[in-house]
Image (spheres, rainbow over the protein chains, first blue to last red):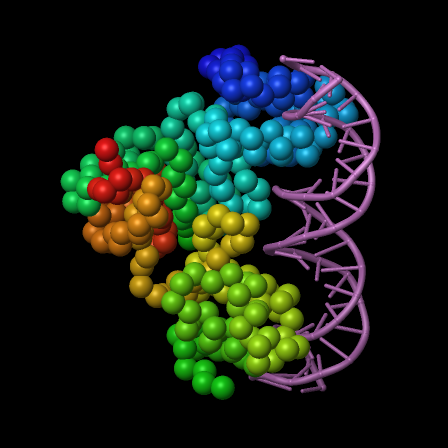
Length: 140
Length: 140
DNA sequence: TTTACTGCAAATCTTTTGCATCAAC
DNA sequence: GTTGATGCAAAAGATTTGCAGTAAA
């Protein structure tokens, strides 16, 4: 879970090839604290290995997505972002005015989850909820 | 062309020009039941008036967005979608298994909204929330 | 008359794809 | 040796922008 372990193992066991490019991509994703975009992954890798192509990043992300090893989220801003599926839950408050992203504690959503289960018998998957609105600074 | 919509009035009062293109765009948006994309708006208009350009649609949508007259939502699929901000609130519980969409009463979200305001000073825009999960029938 | 708005074309930006080559297994 | 993975370049799809002409107020 810390190093390029979990996802790498999974890929290997499923018979996918462990190329250097893939391992670098996995390493960047797994060591990233926030959701990260394909471009950001690529930039980090290119700093050390300039000839890794961004299409390889996209292809690897698509593979990981298909295997449910990463989660995809759209936080606005024209880019899709990725996150290891086995890492902790991330909730975000996104300011529609200035783009600030505020991390939201999971406890804030617990009551909602309970309500949905109780009143709608619906098991909500609240792992990557993005709530849009307006932050303190952007309220006139 | 009939121009007695809420958004039209608002634009007019704010001093923006009511061009035929704008009115057609507004008409399509206001008469749409679902969230609609820029391309869909354009397609509908072009059927009658072939020389309306899609960049005009985008520019109008940006204006309406800036004035909080339409809400933007990303439902995946590479396109951003739009919806009149003053139309009824849309909350949905979407089952990831069978695709069932359950309408969610607004009251279920009120406590969350309060919490966000109180603890994060964040004014949440919960008009078009989509919560993914698993419905009654798909729980085993 | 004034200048905000439009159409057009070209530019951007993100993501995907075809294809020949290469390397993990 | 197979064949899946990569690099490259080009394509695709959505959205934005520069500019000159047009029309709403």
